[in-house]
Structures are given as C-alpha cells and as structure tokens.
Amino acid sequence: MPRTLTLDLPDLPATHALAARLARLLRPGDAVLLEGPLGAGKSEFARAVLRAAAGDPSLEVPSPTFTLVQSYDLPAGPAHHFDLYRLDGPAGLDELGWDEAREGIVLVEWPERLGGERPEGALTVALEPLADEHARRARLTGWDARIEALAA
Image (cartoon, rainbow, N blue to C red; front, side, top):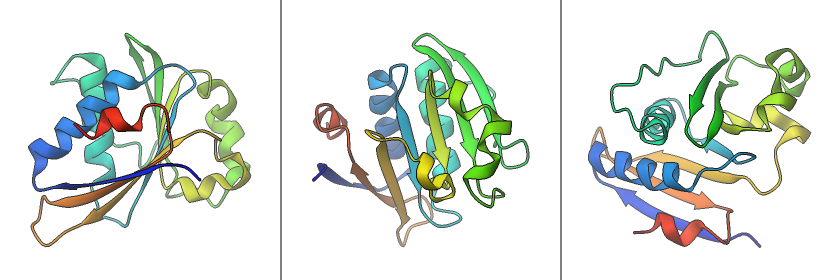
C-alpha cells in the first residue's frame, strides 16, 4: 500500500512552498498526477512546481487547457504539463507525445483520463478546496522513498 501524506495548505504561500519542495525532488521519469474538482488549484499548483523547478518565479506557464500539453526545459530535464480535461480517454495520448514525454517529467491534470496509461510509481496529489478561497487540503500518495521530504 503506497504511503499517504495529508497537508492543510491555508493560503497560496503554503501551496507554493509545497510545490517548491516537490520541484526539488523531481527527476526524469517522474509523473505527478494532479487530481481534484474544477477550481481545486491543480493549475496553480502545477504552475508553482514548474516555476520553482526552473528557478524562475516569473516563468510564463500558461494553462494547457486548450493545447493539452505545454513543454519546458528545466535544469532537471524536460518537463511536460498535460491537461487532459478535454480528452475522452487514453486513445489521444499518442498524438500528444505521451511516450516521449514520459522520458522526462510529467505533470498531469485530470489523470483519470489516462486509463491504463497511468504511470506506476507516480506521485498523486489530490487537492480539495477548503472554506477559504485560497485554502486547500493536499493528499499526496506514492513516492514512498521521497514522500516524507514533502512534509517539511
């Protein structure tokens, strides 16, 4: 059974701090699966991870809602941010370069659309909005050897 870590993030700085801790741990072959309802903060979290991983807080990180994937050259290697909301299932992944992207780092919003292509060993970050507009609960599952580094 994969390990799970639950963190309450009271505001955007707390969310960005978690994203920065995650960014420091990323390496080629990693998959981060971002789950949660619309408005839970998946895109905000992915944006913060990519900016921290790039070491550039002003990095332009558009949402891949319409392009479905955005790619970045990071110090740790290539990274690909997928938003699969408009995908019906895994059939369209080939056109998006999924297999090639998996050689780098992938961040995936709406990972339930991956079906059988869901990567083993991925870190799942399930975000749940709380009462305050910028507060959320993050439930992280996976990465047994590295998950404790995300608690700090």
